[in-house]
Image (tube, rainbow over all chains, first blue to last red):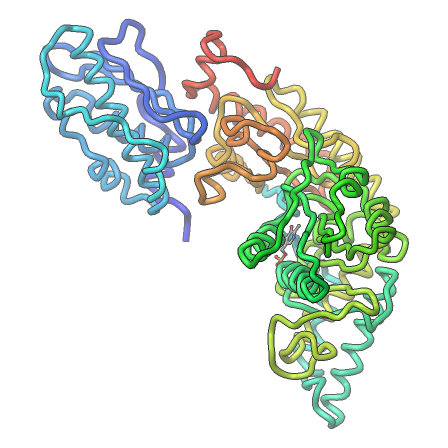
Length: 143
Length: 396
Ligand SMILES: Cc1ncc(COP(=O)(O)O)c(C=O)c1O
């Protein structure tokens, strides 16, 4: 059996939306190099819609694939939808991840939320704090 | 195209080894413990193999105990020495921080049972010194266990001198020589070794077979109870085909050392020189005192698993010490032991060559690694920060 699904390998080999958005409306970075995964998400937002999204990832195959899939799932969507993105949705869209790699999809969800929070903060938009729980610590990587 | 550069994980069986096994799979199927002719044929083969491997190691046949591989031999050697030590009230063991888990996990268990273990520092170059060993020995020390060559970074320890220190101090010396035997000359007498573990699948023999050498006079304790095989020290009907394959593979490997060692070392140095051209990468472990086929690098700003997967797409089989590939949270204990910080240890790549590797393959590996490292760096936020000066390079 292969380590990853075909979908994961496709998004790993041909990641969508890699790169940087200059003058992004929101930027979110989660993870740390010590743990071996960092994801950075850049958002362009027009009329409450994610008009563009890019990512940079330092991490394993599933981290890159999760970032790629997460950006695909929110691109062109209303910001309200982006806020509802869950790690389960990312995992399902990838046709599953090995149990010890599920934290990669969690990171992807958190990176997008962090970028959204940054967007709200920068633009002085009020938001419900409970939408953005504190980033999980390293211990919780242990699935 | 496929380039297999993961020979430290396991090797392809040699034709010689396969052919040495076939008669014992097809015709000589007896149980060496049986008294009848069919059994005695198997017994003869078994003892012939024992004599041949003993001679290749500088041992006598009675000092060779066949096992299921390197892990079992490590476990049995350390357990036996611990039991002998405890009887005399000696419960201190000396080892290093970067042993194979077969050794480390056995030592951890012994610590829970009341033994104390000193893990010697292996320094940035991945080498311990005989002086460190001498300084660590106390009247309580019952065992020194230090690997001959490291499985990840390939560094070769000064085994002969360490053995001499132990001999003088009257302390048993075990070495996990799984990565060394068949790759560099190893002789238990010249190297002052009391116990040695080896595994056939690391030198083009079959998997699931190895041996423990224990110098005459050392009383082993068995891990597996049952029949009287292996002079009562390892129960279970002997895996004759595998043992025959191991003996043939070892003969071939040791006999060809004068030819393969310089050739594989030259390929290794070519690979190291090529990979050294990649900026912000560094060789792990001493450049010269290392196994002929071992190359291990860290590249800053990238993670090892994605590197391996993309190399695999290009037909190159390698390995990494990143946490993602180990299935644990931490990167390789070996890379941490030589002082690599976590973030750099995640970006490690091990390439292990053998005598079948060609110069063209080495050059193809260099090109592929260079391209993949660059590609991954281009999408890495860590690399961007390093390049922007927002994060400090660990490797210049
Ligand atoms: C240094 C070292 N010791 C022990 C072992 C375990 O050997 P085996 O796989 O035969 O149990 C290995 C190989 O995995 C090794 O490289």
